[in-house]
Image (cartoon, rainbow, N blue to C red; front, side, top):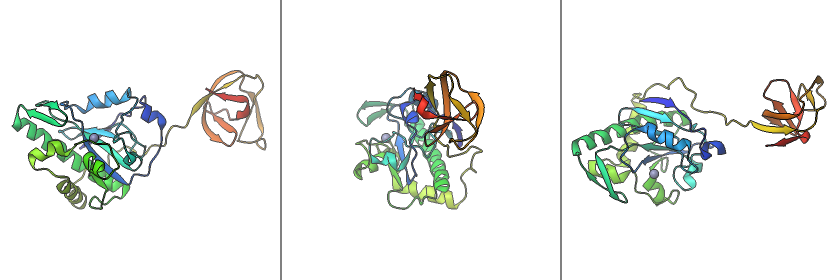
Length: 261
Ligand SMILES: [Zn+2]
């Protein structure tokens, strides 16, 4: 497994920037015969609705598209507030005929692909269980989208079992395999990327007066620096009460004279 990060920073979901305390992991399958994770990472960037935390391929590729501890829009239910959601891609050798039904044009290639994504998912979920100290065998911790539906925490979809059933793969076995991957220690060591990211809480304000003081801290008890912002638009990176910290590093300003834009 190799995780790379390509956050969907321009998606509505990312911009919402809500954090969660992950209590579980939900596994999805994309429901379209597109094997390349990069395609989904690209689509989510311009999405107004769906955005998962990551998408994985049959060759061990994982693209992380949201910080794991952000609220994803992956299941159309309350599990968005509790579960990290990851999509597995599907092989180009199948063709959907309506709903969750498909024809298989190359059963050997299809099976190899599905087994590949299964293996990647086991490794990724073991990795995430370790980060968030989750027990993969605990009730409701690792669920498929369709299991989420049965529990009333996700919308009515058939993934992932609609494709796994053909190969004797089950969520019960998956949870056990994740457990063995953790205890066997055969998950990749944590990649040298930070799993959690603080939401960017910066915003831009317009200032319409010439003589707004910049102070060294968030309050009138802090001395003025002797500089003014002047009129214009300024980025605030940190807020403390009615005070905002200028991105430039020049200091803090009183936000009563600033209009958020
Ligand atoms: Zn799904």
